Structure formats: C-alpha cells, structure tokens
Image 1 (cartoon, rainbow, N blue to C red):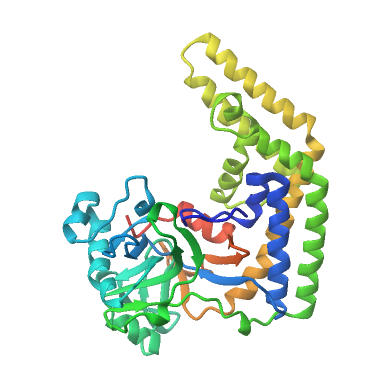
Image 2: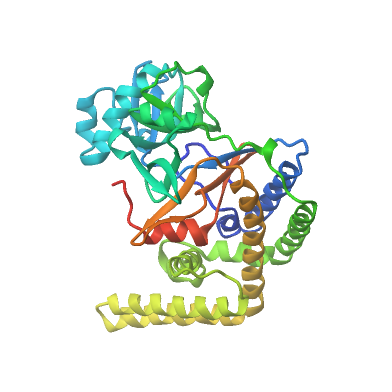
Length: 400
C-alpha cells in the first residue's frame, strides 16, 4: 500500500501485488493482520471508514496561503489548480449538472466554518431526494452515482436529510503549507463544524466497537492470512517479474503482464469471479490474444503487423513457460478476495442506511460500496467487486 499524498485514487487490496510485486503483497498481508485485530476487538493502530458511492468528489476549505474559502473537485491538486471562490469561477471551469452541484456546495459548505482543507463525496442536493416505498418501508432516498441510499423518513437521519439542501460525507483532511504538497490523512474534523440544517454532514466512521464476528470466522480469517503470507513468499520473485514487465510504451505495453488488471476488470464486467486458477489461465490467454489481434488489425503496414504478432507470440510463450507461476498467482489473488469478503460481510452488518441499485425491475438490495482501511499512513480499499464493481461498470450513473 503506497502512502497517499493526495487522495485521487485508492487501490483494491488484492491488486497491490500487481502494483508493487512482493512488497505490495506483503503490505496487503500487514493490512489483513491489522484487520484481524480490529475484528477481534484487540488494540489496533488501524482506522476503518465506510466508502460511500458519492459523486462528485469535492475538495473544499480555506486556501492554506490566501485563507480564502474555495470548493472544487480533485482538480484543485492539478499543476494549474481549478479553485472556485465564487459562482463565476465555477462557470469558468465547469458546466451542466457538475457546475450546479459545485455552486450549491459553495453556498452551503462555507457556513460550516471549515478552517483547513478537506475532501468528501457529495451525496445529494435538493432535487436528488425522493420519497419511495421499498419492501413496505417509507424511505427518503438519493442516488449520487450507482448505489441508491435510503433511510426511514421518520427517523432522526431521515428528518435531517429531508431538511437539508445538500448532503455530503467528508472523509479526508489535508496537512501542508500549499495545495501542491499537501498530504492526506484519514477523517475530517466534523465535530468542529458550525451546525446548520441546510447541510447534512453524514459521518462515515465504521463503528468497529459494534462488530460481532464468530470465533470460528476469526480463526478462518487468521488461517487464510497465514496462507496468503506463505504464498506471497513463494510467488514473490514471479510477482516482481510481472511488475517489471508492465508498461505503457514499447514492448512492455504489449506484454501479457500489462493486460492482467484489464483482464480482472473484464471478468468483473462479465459477472465472473476467479474461482478456478486453471480456467483463469485459459481465460487470460484468450483475453490477451483477442486484444492483441485487434492491435495487429490497427497496423497499416505488413511490417508493423508482423511486429505486433511477434509481441503477441512472445506474450503467449511467456504464459506457457510460466504456467505454474500463473497458477500460483491466480490462487493467491482468489485467496485474498476470500479473506476480503469475510471482512466486508462482517462490516456490512453495521450499516444503518439501506442500499439498493435501480434496475428495470425496480430496486434491488445490494451492499455498501465498501470500506477503506487506514494503517500506518496508508489507505487501501475493500470492495465487493463482483457486486459493486459489476454494478458500477454496467448500470447507468445518475450523476454526470
């Protein structure tokens, strides 16, 4: 798990071995050991947050140099930052629904009295809220992105949301003397905000003190973690070789290693899990060959087509020459997913918001987007990719 300077993208715990080789695998094991402490209610330096499916991601607060209040998206950290102090600034950088939402955020976030720089996910504005009946329950709902969130209308939270003009969950604060060099840390000082009914600030700390995990489940998680640690050591050299062969230019761009994460995402889009390593080896070979044949077809000259074909043959040969290593890597990947799913199942029971996805047949119950573990300055996400990521890839988004 790499330390986060600015929170632009979080990685899945099972992908870190593809990002950083054996070091990434070892870091994932360290995270799992910390989660074992947390699930077992033992002293831990870890910190867990619920990951909300909000959009857009907003950064706001007082500029560290000028002291002027601003709002913006993640682009406030660009080399040429897009900072919005007034509505006119929003119109310069943005348009459509995004511009409307940022203007609303500018209006209602400023009275909160934010003194530093924080980041969060926008959940709703006035027009996004709906009152619906799902499973005989009267809910106030909002759909910021893929997931629809609902809470009973007559509950305290329901009344809070009904009265609000905008809703947000703040999850990160920044430290530093200028935007370009600021570093991200977990949490936001929401308890210090001024109270206002216009802005519903939703807390996202996962109440780990309330978690209840059976002893046999904890023992399974511990055994899995120990197995993963051993597998990391066994596969370490090959994982490092895969990372060394990944790239975005030259021959590395077309090496089979560079297609691994694409392959995993494609399996998710198709609603498939990596349950059989031998089938996964066959599937990655077919996926890679299909992708490379398309690259061959793009080439105008016979010579360039021949070059692409050779790169494809070299990639297929690499797969065939390392069948045992690929088998171990896919087995390790699946074992990490299994352990992650144990954590997600335990934490989902703590959530108070109802979560659904909208289909052509109505509302379908789903789990929350996932969770973020903070540990030793690192952040890593735990997401049920077969459920949430599949929905995220395939269902229409509410926000644009």
